Length: 377
Image (cartoon, rainbow, N blue to C red; front, side):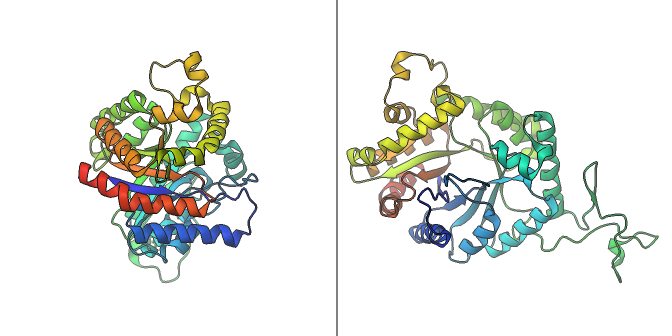
């Protein structure tokens, strides 16, 4: 059955008091829960003076949001894994899993913004790609071990648990060696979901999709579209076969993130977001190039592409779930069937415009999701 979630950004470009930013998140997740939307995701970001997405501690925030909901799944996309102490993170996420009654999903990443990474763990700077990947892989393994091994112990170049001088008066036999020294630690609590919450990573490269399969991680992706997306999912499926048991239980295709706004008519929806889409394309293109939006074989220097209206460029290549309920439902059904997509993350445009986002969520729940679920099962 297709799953449809919302991705919420703690944007604050208007410089609101932070209590108002938090209250918006609370209202959004409460509404999404009431409407029967499947999941609600937040990211992690630091030092964002521009107010695009200010979310320094999603674990703490999700604990607050979870107690206001009953059924919706709670997701973090993504925890910047190298920025956290892996044992403390395992403890925090296990606690959050209990606070959500086992409704937690977690995506891990190596981090995207250089300023975030080097100021929280300079060793994980992605300029050294091999070292960055090694740091991510070890921390991922440690989080999983903390959730599943009892007692927990770890020894590597970076970490030793328990510390050789650890003492614990009256420690049980399972935690001590013949000399009375502590040989393992109790990680309490273990997650509510056996083995830990479902895990994802966020990537848009073949190497990232392949690594995810071998690490037993599902994938969330944003930019890839059409045949580019098909090729990435083919890589994921092929590497799942190679990984065998390590990839057991993974989906056959990634979850895709798309921008969304729903209004009574296509014309109204486009008029509301066209400038924001234009600004977004301009910013992303400066950072990653116009090709990031294109299908395989398309040339970013083609005048027909270079001079196209940004809204048309993205809409025609399935980046935008924007329009009337009928249009959005038809697009989601077609993409799901053609690309094998069973999991959507929709990020509302006009994030700070409560009236338009609330209408989008209501139209999504009342008119789009019934069509999508009836068509896809």
